Image 1 (tube, rainbow, N blue to C red):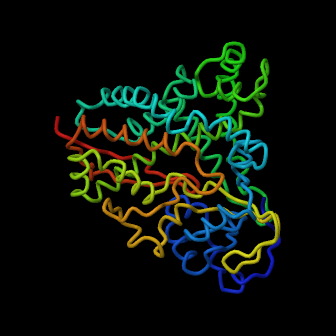
Image 2: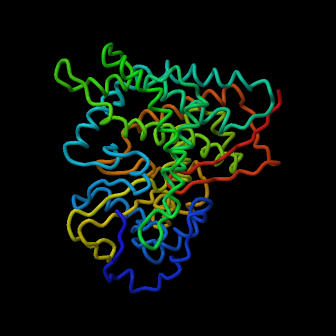
Image 3: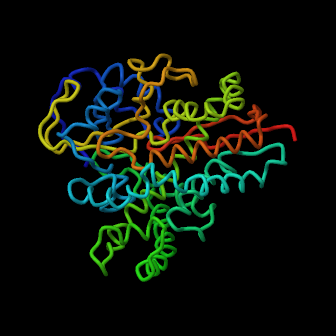
Length: 414
């Protein structure tokens, strides 16, 4: 996917030499200054450290994501991490088949049938571990565990511990976002994929016996349905065909609700009067979540498209076969769409955001993810309505491809 020779374009005629100095460390720790400047100077620009063009405004991200002149493609680090055919990086019949495999169980009418019974007991169980302690670190003790347990149980991984699921998604995350490229278009840190490879080996060792069982004895778990649904009698999809999408789910689908929930909490803590409103009126929780997802998008820059023919976007001429990384986190801070976008504001006009992507590769689990976050926050605020952020501990966000707070320390009176 890496471009080693770029055409002369309108963007490159500007002085964008500052992009040569951008590092992955900058993008992982605080991408906002880089993307603010990109939005102002070059909404579509080649970023050397990523070895790819990057779309940074809402208009350009949406244009590329929905254009018939672009197909879905996985980033190089994502391809190295997930393998082929991952649902986020394929098109045509394969993409249609994979979507038909995962989407039926995530349709609203289906999710409504079981989501309360699945998620609410999980949330209550994790709360029982610390609600009498007077303090907690909510990312590791609540937000991530609720997220991974809910999806893990849905997939059929009830016997895999929440700690193991969290370990897998963190390792896959660091592998997926090991995106820095050198001047030769090669990975700058190839050893950075080792822990992702180790996680995949552990996943295979755990899931292979389950697949053996599901092939012979189908049940109602998601992976069992992926194997059997839409197949001729007596046939199943090959496990090698579905494993890349299993990895996608064990990273992105597990990460997004947990970090969306945590980011929403950080945003509400920055506006104490709005936190009080939401605690007093739980019907505001979905609105609070929507703003939290816009404010810090959990899937920040993890998706890409590739041009299928020569095309001009934002004044930049792109040859066929040119990949473009879609920075949805940047798009959701676009001052052309949102007033004061760096501030969390529950009462912001409810404009659409791009936290779940756009086009044919938009997230298939939007409805499920929103309900996991809603139920998680409902249970948290009902059990501990007097949460306060522990100001003795800072809140650090991390991640360029996937982004969220690394910790969130809170206290309350018992």
